[in-house]
Image 1 (cartoon, one colour):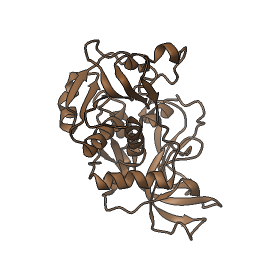
Image 2 (cartoon, rainbow, N blue to C red):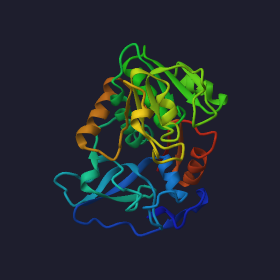
Image 3 (cartoon, rainbow, N blue to C red):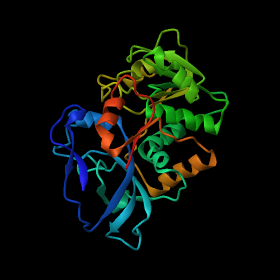
Length: 319
């Protein structure tokens, strides 16, 4: 089969399209034909060598949409069945979805019933599962004012779409490092845009919010907490700021009184939670169309685009 193999860390050029052996089904695993997948910032970090646990050579890719080719449990997963999979060390401890076929553990393969196009379905697994978990944690109320930091990311756009589909009257503000993307964010459904060129801090005059979605991560969490209204919720999910941990963080002094800090881990997955997300998307008719679609042959270009200053929204590959 064809697969993109990373032999050593580097830029998009280290994604080498090669002929490799198609994996064989083994007990506890399934062979899935890849139909499409999203590109994620965590894969860019891994490609650059910023994931210490990942050993090269490796086929990257932490999510996939595909069809069962062969299964070690054919009574549960039958050939031709449409499935999705996310996380579970796919593309990290074992080879991932940047290939024509991928071998996946039984317990992280989730059957789906859908009429969505492959491009739209490929935009869902990791991005919308994460966004849905974030949105649930916010406990949205009708009069909430919500801020999404790093709003131009795929998850940022997805959270906005989920909130607006649930209640169009909730006011959602997004941040961008540049004013050049303001119109794109407004077109995507945001009510207001704050230009915040400093990833560490919001502009001092930007006000306070009932709920904040922080996708920059630990780099900006201490500052974001200062922009939270009393009894507000800050969800910090994502590490787009390039800082992984809250070092020297004293919650007693860093979290203002009667504010709440939470997160969402997309590695905690089940068939029930996947179906809950899919049911929500269908019930509220959420627009899941990706911002940009590339062919498998242009995966390098997809990586280059997502890591550039021009990137916006979810990027997917369709085979």
